[in-house]
Image 1 (spheres, rainbow, N blue to C red):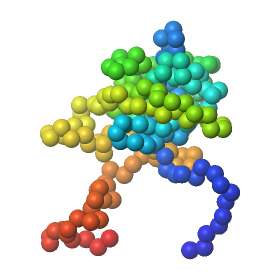
Image 2: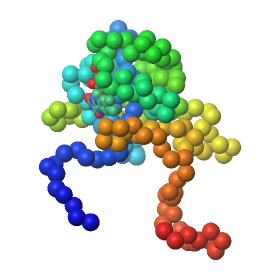
Image 3: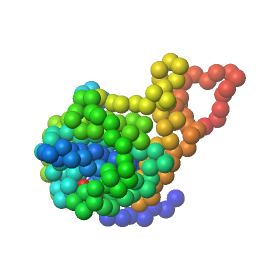
Length: 196
Ligand SMILES: Cc1cc2nc3c(=O)[nH]c(=O)nc-3n(C[C@H](O)[C@H](O)[C@H](O)COP(=O)(O)O)c2cc1C
């Protein structure tokens, strides 16, 4: 296949897309949309997030030293988009959508009730990079909707109907996995062998 070359840019797609809640010094909650976010370490559990200093959320997260990463579902796409184009400096986005909040467990920042999974984080470091500052966030506690657990208490992420972001567009995930971790090296069972 013939490949064309584009100048270096962040064409890392798809990415997660999340709703990040944060609180001001006075305890006011804001929410904004983040696509530049990724797991970077398992132990300690660290997530990297890129935030532009002009965001209201930047100020709140820097001052409070914490935030909550709320994973949105297909039913929340409109909230995701709106919170990514309208600043809390102009509109109270929580009130606008009448978003219900749940109290934090390990942080003072509340999470969004409508998100089935919420990661409570503390800021470990902030590094200026250019347009965005790199926030390294340590995950202190994860809230998971009971309804996502199976009878063995395994979290079934496929039930959560999460979304991702692909070069300017929001997508739901296929409910059927293409494979599971390590499947490529597992011994084939006689009855279920497949060619892939
Ligand atoms: C899909 C999507 C992804 C975004 N990702 C980021 C991001 O990673 N970092 C960032 O600083 N802003 C990002 N934004 C923009 C902010 O969410 C947006 O400027 C928001 O209005 C800031 O809100 P605030 O001022 O209330 O904090 C994204 C917007 C959208 C729609």
